[in-house]
Image (cartoon, rainbow, N blue to C red; front, side):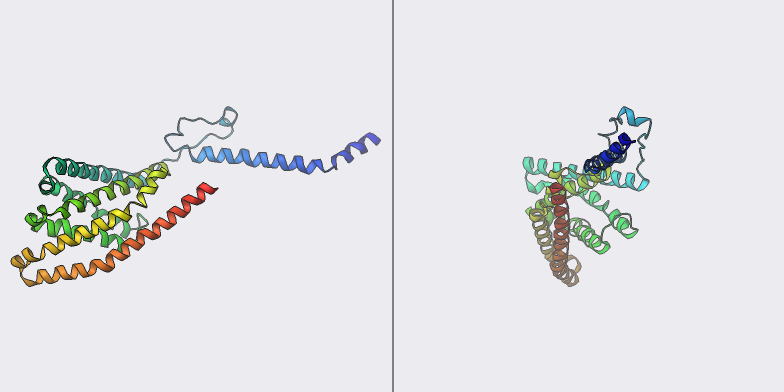
Length: 273
């Protein structure tokens, strides 16, 4: 009996809570590791990494196939990134070899149909397929359509002789290659390289003013030939478009700034943790 009493007394020493606390921590840590492996097995770089031998029989990893929505959006963004990469490559090649005056003849038609594909983004926002503001998306797509299906299509001579057309397409293509690549990678892997995040949310400081100023200049240049072709109403229309561009450009730019602050703050918090 005394021996029994002594062993029970030993159990009451302060070391027991410490051991219990350590065991509890190790158990949580082990559980966390199991969860991490299970939730990341659907990534290509992790799909060939098996669970530890002692865990395979207990809890095999389950690969959750992507939804049809995710597959469609990955395909859409991937194809769009490829198309705009072709536009960018052709602009650089043609402008370097033949000058900016040949850019419209070499890439104008291809750019028009590549930009037309972006009409699907209005549908995506309207039906809730993506979390994008509908009005902001409509403004972005409509302004591009005005240029490719209006100004550039009806006044090719004026457009082809302007450096603004080349600078506009350069700003568009670089922006879209980065944007669509960002979305495709994020949807496919669940994370994006930090360098691509930085480019996505900082390059617009230079690209956006170049694109907007080039678009405005082309609309301004179309006033005279448009007035000769359709009369004074076209000139009024151009003035109205330029007037709308001022608040529209501010809305789109502040929208990008808000997105940038949100993403940069989240990225910084992940680094600190």
